[in-house]
Image (cartoon, rainbow, N blue to C red; front, side):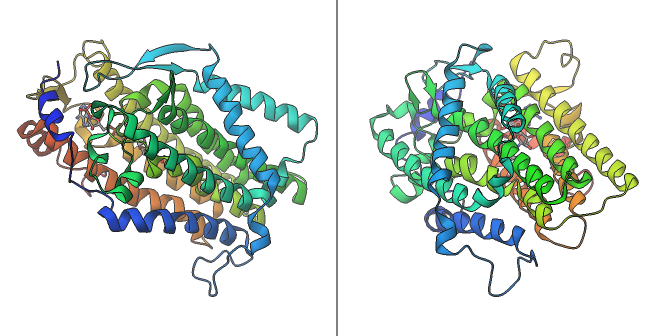
Length: 425
Ligand code: NDP
C-alpha cells in the first residue's frame, strides 16, 4: 500500500529543500573533506600526531602520486565488480519504488569479503609486502578521491537520461552544484548492476579492512609482531564490516538506499572517506605503539560487545518488523498505526530510544579508539565525527519521518522521548 505516492509525485519536478548547508555546503564539502582525509593520514603518521600542530602535517607533492596506487585501486574495484556479478548467494528485492516496481539485488557481499580474505591470506603466505600499504596510503587516498570526483560527474551527467520517477526527491533542485553533491538519480544502474548498492558496502568497506591489515603487517615488519592494541582494532572493525555484509539485505531499507540520490556525498563517503579515515586508529598505532593491560583490553572488549549487541539486535528487530510484522520475533511488540498503513514500533529496542542502533554504533566507535590510549586526540577522531554524523543523521531522519507519518510520529516522540542516549539526548 503506497498512499504517499501521489504526494511524492507532486514533489518530484523540483524540490527546493536543501540539506548539508545547501549550495554553500555543496561547494565547501567536496573541497574540505578530501583535504581532511589527506591531512588526517599525514597527522596519524607524524611523530607528534597532533591535529593542532602548526604548520600542519601535509603531504609533499612527490608523496601524492604513485602509479601503483592507481593500479591497485582500479584492480580492487574491478575485483569486487566481478564478485558482485558472480551467481553467488540469493537475490533479494528492495522496497517498492514510486513507480510501483521493486529492484532486485544480489546478496553476495559476504562472499566477496570471504574471497577477498582468502586472496589476502594467499598474499601473506607468499610473503607479499602488505605492510607497503602504509607507504601507499596517501597516493591511494588521492586516487580514491580522484575516482570519486570522476564517478560523480558521470553519475550527474547520466541522471539527465533517467525518467523523472527515477530521481531522488531531494536531489532534483535544479541547482547543478547541489544536485551534483547530493545525487540526482536514486538507483543508477548499468543493466542489472546497481552502482549505489555496489559502492555502499563493498570496495570501500572491505578496503577499510585491507588497509587495517596492511597497518598490522607494517607493525610486524617494524616490531616483529602485532600489538594487542592493533589486534583489537583490527578484530573489532573486521567484526563490524563482516556484520554489515552478513546482514547485507538490511541495507535495502536504509536511508542511503531508499531515500538518498547517488552523488558526490555518497560516492566519496563510500570510496574515500570510509577506507581512509575509519582506518586512522590502525594507521596511528603503526608509529605510536600503545601498551595495553589485560584488564584494559577486557574492559574494551566488553564495551565493544555491549555496543555490538545493542546495534545488531535493534537493527535486526526493525528490519524483521519492516519485512514481516507477523513474524513471531516481533509480532508481540507494541506498535502505533500511521496514516500510511505502516506501523511504528513503540516497545522493544525502538521503545528505549528513537535510534537504539545509533547508540550501539557509538559505543563500538568508542571501543575502537580506546586501545590507542589517551595521549592523543587523533584516534578519537572517528568517535567525535561519528557522534556529529549520527546526531545530524538522526535529525534528518526525524524530519523525513515527521513528513511521512505526521501526527503518528509526534505520538511516537511523546511515547519515546529520547533520541539516542536514554535520559540524556
Ligand atoms: P535506520 O536503520 O535507523 O532507519 C531509519 C528508518 O527506520 C526510519 O526512516 C523509519 O523508516 C524506520 N523507523 C524509525 N523508527 C521506527 C520505529 N519506531 N518503528 C519502525 N520503523 C522505524 O537508518 P540508518 O540508515 O541511518 O542506519 C542504519 C544503520 O547503519 C545504523 O545502525 C547506523 O548506526 C549505521 N550507520 C553507520 C554508518 C557508518 O559510517 N558506520 C553511517 C550511517 C549509518 P520507515 O518507517 O520508512 O521504515
